[in-house]
Structures are given as structure tokens and as C-alpha cells.
Amino acid sequence: MALFVLSAADLFVIVIPVEGLTLATVLARPQHWLRPALVMALGSTLGCIALAELTYWNAPWVLARLGALQDSSSWTWIQSHISTLGAGVVILGAYTPIPLQVLTVAPVLAGLKPETLYPALAIGRLGRALLLCWAASHARSSFSRVLSQFKKARRELKELDRQD
Image (cartoon, rainbow, N blue to C red; front, side, top):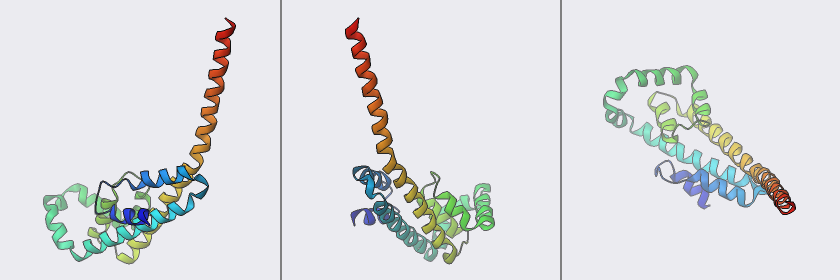
């Protein structure tokens, strides 16, 4: 439950390390990686939807705060890509280091409709969470194998030192 709430609040409080907490949870119990992934994805998706709704309701106010940025070539580029690629930008953006707030607010301000944005946010967040948690669940066994190889090499080196 705490992971769900933190994942949703992460959109509004930028300093919550939700992915780190989720990965720590998975590393503690790697065989149960699916549940933390689903909880993080659901909480994050609901947080994204809440932020998007707030942006839809207050779009003129948000645009006014952007000032000269909304007339810049960067903003024009963003708007053209969102209008061309639509939900694909949001889904692919979930796998990049783009801040989630930007990935949620920019499509709203660029005119992406809620019925297109919300499923794209859900797909992107779920895909990222599943990928991260699956990788973390398999990382522990890989790390253990590498560590055991280093220990074996260390023992062999000690035996060689003793023979000299």
C-alpha cells in the first residue's frame, strides 16, 4: 500500500525514489517481482492521470507560466511530434530518462486528448515497471554467480601464494 501511495505522490513531490524502493523490494524477494511492478505501475499511472487532469483544468494558467517557452522552436518541435506520433511518444517516453511530470504535462498542453493519453500512460508505466522489476529479480542470481567466481579465484590465488 505504501508503494502505491508513494508512486502516485511521486508526480507531485519530485524527491521520492519510487523506483529505488521498488527495486529494493524486488531484490529482497526476487521470486515475487510481479506484485511490486503492478503496484508501482498502478500508483504511478493514477498519479499521472491526476496531474494530467489538473493540467487539463488549468491549461491556460500553465501556458501563461511558460511565457516565452511556448513560442520557442523547442515547444513547436514537441507539439509537432506529439500531434504526429500521438500516444506513441508517451509510451516510448516512459522508457527514457524524461521526467514523468514532463511526459504527462507536455502532451496535455500539446492537445493530446485524455482518451488517448491515459491508456498510453498506463501502457508505458506498466511496461517500464515490468521491465525494471523483472531485471532486478534476475540480477540477484547473476550477481551471486559472479561473486562466487570471484571467491573461487581468490581461494585459488591464496593456494598459489601458499605453494610459493
